[in-house]
Length: 469
Ligand code: AMP
Image 1 (cartoon, protein in one colour):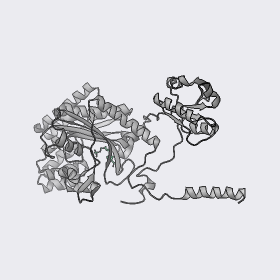
Image 2 (cartoon, protein in one colour):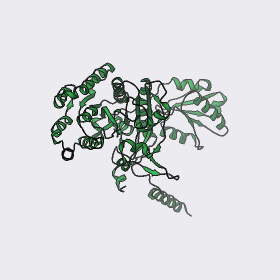
Image 3 (cartoon, helix red, strand yellow):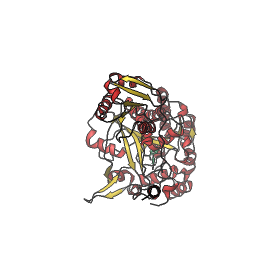
Image 4 (cartoon, helix red, strand yellow):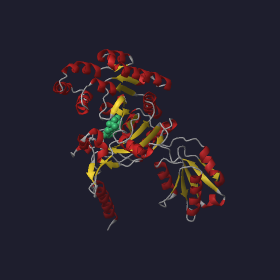
């Protein structure tokens, strides 16, 4: 084969490699996250974890799948449509968890009941819902979740709202808007059996007033329609609580007083009143909420602006436990990251501190010893695993965004030294091996340029939407 034929063959094979479609596609509504994405996700998650720990919450972990009944016990069989439910090989009905709260309350009832109250627990991880994917709405996504079990209702509710809003602030988000309501007030106002109440609340949640009226007609209480419509449209500062109290009359006054006290407690936490509104239209989708409910938006995210929600609920009793106050929330990690990206609040990933370049035969082992000492000093350090020459190695160190290249030639090693190259400035200097780790540790992190990021196709984008179901 001539040189030009070989060149042609080479070009052809690269064309074929690029044109080939992968053998497997990831399932609809799921995502792969590359290193740059994961750095952002870990950053956001770690802000929640740090803050939750500082609030005295402790981490728990529960299985990614549970018995199906755990999720249908309160929500009824209709919820199955929204789940990844399946039979295992032993014929058991199981479902991938669509949220954390049910699992944590199952765990509480079976194992944690004797612990001192209140129990303050947090979890992070992936959850699964059978939804129509779109931007910010996936079938597998991640949540950070916190629950307080066994505290008094009012201070516990305030504590979880403060943690939820505080998490968004700790991430660095400026645009935070919580909406706080009280589903307990609505439940008391609706004199219906719980299944009927659920349909009315669902129509209010969706602002589907024709459905609301049809349902109230069916239940023989069309007179409630006007007050309910007025109520769910009320949103604003504490003054809307007076307006809402006028609509519902004296019976509901305790519920509004409760929300006023929450505002006072949030003042004491230092939560700005600009960060939340009272909104009587907050009716959470799940059936287990009983009292204060809230949702949090990142207003600049558009259609999928809701980043989280929570409230007071009652699941322990449903799962065979005692009557005890429970409150908590979940924030969607994917949406928090989107919000952080939109506000440029994410921290760039920590660059690799040192890339060790052994030069010439016979220095590989010494290179590994130097590498190991840098790693032992707590630095991020890597070494040539390919056997490239020095200039290709520097190209690589540059491409991965390493701060320093540590060049080890025989001459330097004989003098127990290394040549350290600052990758951002190109300045090189000799450093004694004994001082190497300290010299790099002491040098300020001037950020090397971020390595180029390959384009990624997210679930729910146009290209990902071609197949249905
Ligand atoms: P929920 O448990 O439905 O209140 O959801 C809590 C948060 O999880 C939401 O506010 C979203 O941020 C996030 N979330 C819910 N469903 C999805 C989804 N399908 N994809 C991505 N994030 C979601």
